[in-house]
Amino acid sequence: MTRTAAIVCGAGVSSTFLARAVRTLATERGLDWRIEPLAEDQVPTRIDELSIVLVGHHLADRFEALQRALALSGVPAALLPEGDPVTTAEHGVALLLALDSARTVSEGHPHG
Image 1 (cartoon, rainbow, N blue to C red):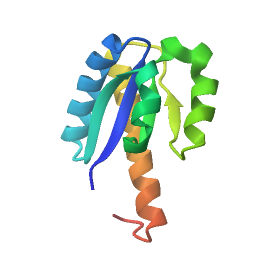
Image 2 (cartoon, rainbow, N blue to C red):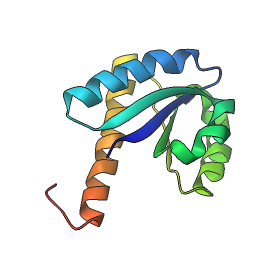
Image 3 (cartoon, helix red, strand yellow):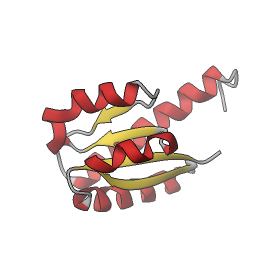
Image 4 (cartoon, one colour):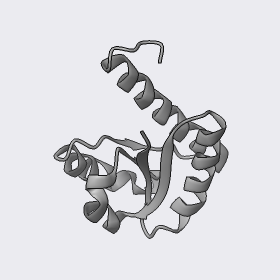
């Protein structure tokens, strides 16, 4: 089942490049995720479609508020680290892998 991860930035521009990098790495690792860039103000209208929200480090000052709002809908959020795009994309994929592992274990298939 394909799930959707949003890469969120202020205006949606930098998230486009990061989403492309995360999408490439996720595909290389065989992950079944749709990776979409979103501007911060688009999140509320898309929340029902999202499985996780990965937030660009430049929004760190607003992350806690965004995380609380998403938690009300059961959508986890993670703040991506500051750094070069490759490292940031790898961290994003690691978060998706962790969610896949948690989901597999919770479904009773620990080696899934």
